[in-house]
Length: 166
Image (cartoon, rainbow, N blue to C red; front, side, top):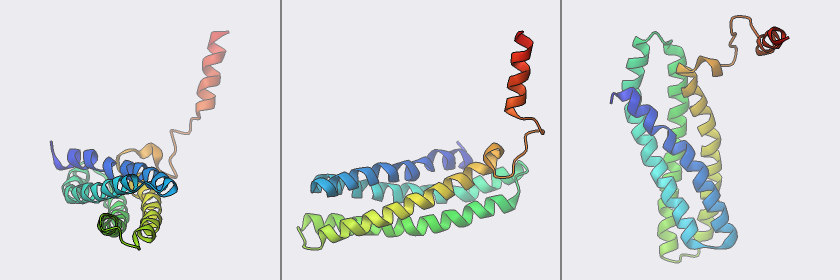
């Protein structure tokens, strides 16, 4: 496995994990179930660790895809969004550790921290959409904004297929 392959393997965990964590945290807060809230915290901490692993493989992945002729500008845009995402995930991970500690000590501020973590998790999830999309656009040109597909539409191709059947 090279750095690009590892980068593609790791990058899904922080994004998908955030959504699972948000759901579990929301349900845990609603039901006042500390074990569920703590489970969400552990998921967010795992997301932070996996995002760091993703960042660590990003430079190697960048070198590989630039050799394939991918523009440095599109990679740089992804890198900038990823760095912002990572900062928010660091904050989410640290807050999640604080949440675990306050829950374990039955601290009076435990509930407040769970709400703060929830807000950071939502913010992280919004950023994850942008970092995931910008990363996907590097090799999946079909998802880029101003993409033209040889000036042919799917409807035209479908109509021609149906005309051949008659």
